[in-house]
Length: 381
Image (cartoon, rainbow, N blue to C red; front, side):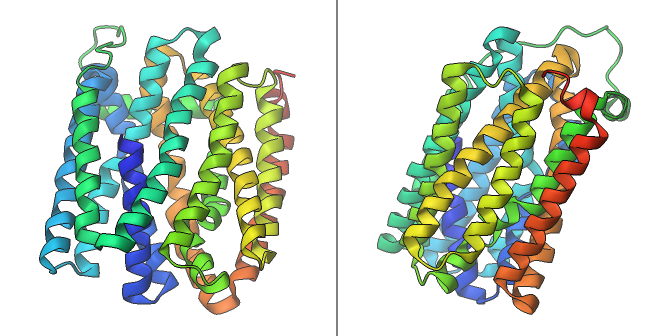
């Protein structure tokens, strides 16, 4: 339910900002604000390691519902402005990155290692199916009844997700009995990451795709839909749905197979394919080409990112899991940097040149990381 609400919210607000400001820089700045809280993710992950994931997740989802209610009320009363949207995005961005940390950590708490891949695949399937349905529902409601009334659905889904979260696992990791000191906890997670070559290499990949790949298939996608392909918000919803459909298929493959046995090689391979497909998307001129490419991009992105999450959860172990997944969210800081720079490049160098530059950097850096940490990253075959 949370994923459904977030996808509806993303489409509605991205289109609102693009139309209201007529600026791709403002669009990418807005998208960047939604990830500003990644700095807090290690701290929130450390708190969850002590207090339990369920309690923290309930607090996060209650905040989502309250912030969405602000946009619903201002939208219905006609007082909504881009400044209000930016303010709510800033507050939401402080906590939203930690939601995925909690969800993945709870799966790691409750599933054995041999079932971890299938469980992560099933969990991701719910998110990807929500991406499809949420994008289509958000586009349809926004076009039909306007932003304010469309947000009634967003608030309803956030509220329902909070109620459902109350019934999730109460597992608390077994700790050593030492008093909780958040600075020490976060430091332990960072030190563990730096001293574990396999985890460190995966963290570099996480930063890289957030800097070079996600700004294209997430941040500037509304711009491409409107300016390159001449679509409305409904067309943007269909584009997001095609991306989600490809990711759903990738999640299904992981759920059925339990994930690739050679995780490192698959992560590297699918990331390279992801960049090559994004390059093709940058040159696409027909809507049908965009749909096909977005489906394939969603599939390769889904396989690579889900396999990376499985590898991190498995390598971290139960005691460090929350902190390592919190550190993983620090890599998302590559996204606001990539979005801000990408928006500037689109306006000053052109959309196609921005795509070519990002994908070129991405491919070169991906191969370099694989070469530097070859033994640790590819030791699984």
